Amino acid sequence: MLRSSNKIIAEFNGVTLGVDPNVLTNGSSTIDDVIDWIDKPSSLPLGVTLPDKLVLPEDILQRDSMLSALRRSIMNGPFWLRLVAARTLGTFRDLENAPALIFALSDPDYRVAKAARDSLRFVSRKPEGFGFKGGNEPPEKAVWAQAQADWTSWLLSVKPNAELIQ
Image (tube, rainbow, N blue to C red; front, side):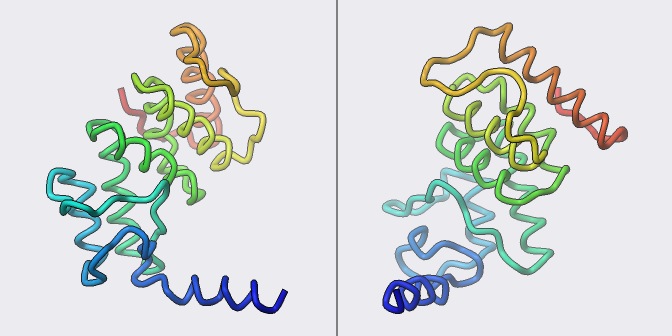
C-alpha cells in the first residue's frame, strides 16, 4: 500500500504547470503553448498528442484562458480536439461550460456528443442526465434534439441569464 501511495504521489509531483506530463514530449512547453495548440491545432508539434483530458492549471488566469479556448474548440475544432474539450470541460464544475457542452450534444461524431452528455451530468450533478443514454449507437436526431432542449431548460432554470450557443 505504501508503495502504491508513493507511486501516486510521484505521479502528481511530475505534473508541471497543470499539464499532464504525457502531453508533452520535450518538457519545455508551457500552458501558453497548450492554449495555442487548442486555438491552432495545426501548430501541435509532430509526435505530441493530447491525452483524453487535459489537467487544468491551478492559476486562475491560465485556467480561464484554457477553458475559454476549449469552449471555442468545441464549436470549430477537429474531431480529436472537440473530444478532448468535451471531456476536459466536464472536469471543472462551472456553469460557463454548460452552453458549449449543450452545443456539443449535436456534434456529428457520437463520441463527442456522448462525452458532452457525460460532462453535463457531472457539471449539473444530475447523474441520470437527460435524453440519450449509453450505448455505442448514435441516437436519432429527435432524441439528441430533445436532450439539447432538456439540458437547455435545466441551464436556464439554474442560470436564467446564460448565453446559449446556436
